[in-house]
Length: 216
Image (cartoon, rainbow, N blue to C red; front, side, top):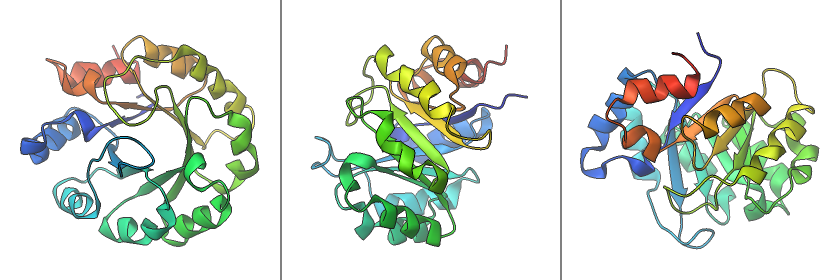
């Protein structure tokens, strides 16, 4: 068994056949479903919102890993939790002045709390919050669009976070993850991988997921 949590990003799924594509990754061994929520302000793209999360909750048993790439996430946390989010990750850059309260809001919903950092943000900014959260998400591309190339220097944040947390803490990586970059990240201490195009663009989704889990 692998200890790597694989969270396929539905940003790369076929939205006309979203239920089918979520069931495909569920049957292929995915651990979570990664849902990228973008508002067109914090990032230059708009994706999906609360009604879609609620609909997804009805058709999968997998935990919903909701990544809020939005401004003022505090306004929407309770609604996303009620819609079925099992993990809510907010961006440090979107709420750094009120991050402690935002984390408390998420935890009050009895779900996992995560904080993400963009490529240009140092992992040092996460240090005061690591004891209060369940997950740190290291972005290895600029958030906003799928299919971007992996930024190797961002992966060096992983061991610096790893040395500050216990074994139950989740260090997730998102951006340009494939069979090669996944091994870089896990060797540095990551234990959760988000992948979109690598999984959904594959002819053999189960094999791709197993590659990320490092199962031959």
